[in-house]
Length: 529
Image (cartoon, rainbow, N blue to C red; front, side, top):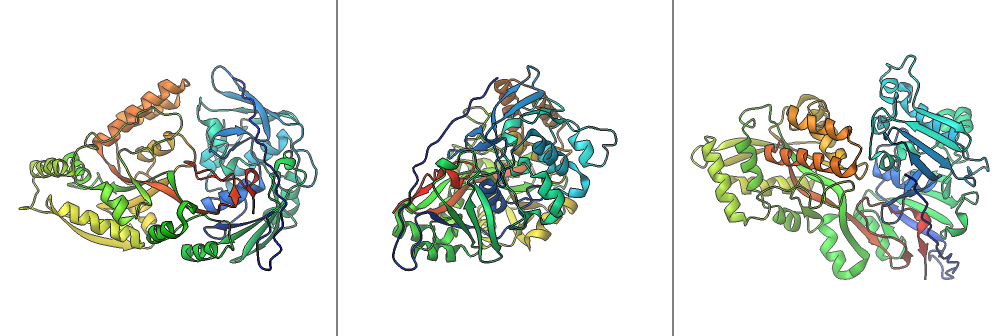
C-alpha cells in the first residue's frame, strides 16, 4: 500500500498589538499542565512532555488537527504483503534546525538508543513490534540486530517481529521521534538543554525556566516553515488549573490544557464556547481483585457493575467532565468495530438494573441481610473520593458495606502493580495510540503490572494473540471485539467513565480542533486579533 501526504496551508497572521502588556499576534501563550520531567523523547512518559515534543520534533508520521495519522518526515511508505516490512521514503527537504539533512540513519540511531537498557526508557515497549527490540531492551540481545536499517540516506526499512496492523499509529508516539546523533554524542544527556538541542520539528527550543516558561521559536529550516503561522510559543506550566483560568480570562494566555472539574459550569456560564469538553481516548475504572474471595464470583462483580449509575457519576460528581462508560474500549477509537461492544444492561433503566443486581447478590449468598464488606482503594483526589462515596451509596442498596483506603498516587499504583492487596481499586488509562489493543492488553494474565483485576482467562488471551497475528484489519477488529465482549461478561475491571479533554481556547486561536487524542500541534494553528 502507498500512502500519499495530505497538505494543510495556514495563513500567516502578522498583526501586532500595540497596547502595553498585550500578547503579540505572532506569540502563542500556551498553558500546559506542568513542567516536563524531561525533554528526552526516550525518557518521556507524560502528556505534558508529548505536547512539547510534538512541537520540537517531527516523526515519520504525525497527527493532524483531527488526530488523523498523516506523513511527517516520511513522504510515503510501502508495506510488504506479509505485513512485516515497512519501507519509508524520507522527504528530500527534511532538515534539522542546524541545517543538517534528516536521514534514515537518524531514525536507526534513535531506535537503537531507546532499546539500550542503559537508556532506561520508560516506554521502550511501545516499539517492541520492531524485530529484535524486546530482546535488546531486556538485555538478552547479544548477537541480535534491531530490525531498523538505512537502505540509503533517504530510505528507511523497518522489519517487525510479527504483523502489527497498528504499527503506523505507534509511530505517532513521542518515543518514535528521531534524534540528531552528533549532538547527542557531543552533549550526552545534556542534548536536551537550550543551545544544545538540535530538533527537526516546526519549532526550536530557546529557553527553559522551570516553574515559569518554556520558549520555542519557529524553525526556519523546517520543511513546511512557510505554512507555520505562529512565530513564538511560550509554554507556561499550570498545575493550579484555576490559575490558568484566571489568566485566560485576563487575556494573558490563549489556551489552557485542563480545567478544574468544579469550575466547568461557572466557566461555561461566563466564557461560553471557549470551554471545550470533548471525548478523550481514556477510561476511568475500578479493578476488582478476582484472585480474592468472594470477588472470584462473577455474579458479585456483575452486580457491582449493574448497580452503578454512571450517568450520575458523570454529571453530578464530575460536572460533565466525564462520559458514562458502556464498555471497556473508549468510543471513536481506530481500527475497531462499529458499534463497539457494550455491557448488555447498558440501556436498561437503573431500577431494573438494581433489581437484577440484588438478585445476583442473593444468589451469591449476600444481600441486605448478609452484607458484603468491600474496601475501595483510591489515590488522593477530591474527585476520586467523591466518586467512591457515591458508589458506596449505590452499593448499599444491594447489600454492600464500603470502607476506604486512600494513598498518594505513587503508593497507590505501587500497590496495584506489586502487592495487589486491594478488594476494589480505582485506576485510569489514557491510550498511547488509537487502537483497541492498547486497552485490551491491560487484562492479559502475562501483564501483571497493569492487570489490576488479576484476570486469568486463557481464552481471552488467546484471542489477543490471534488478533496480533491477523493482518486484515476488519477480521482483527472482530477478534478484538470478541475479547472485549468476554471481558465485559467476566468484569475483572469495571469501566465507569470515559475521559473527556477539558480545555479553554481563545477565539483568537485558529486551527484548534477537538479530537479524541487531544493533540493540538502548534504548526497548524494561527492567531488573529
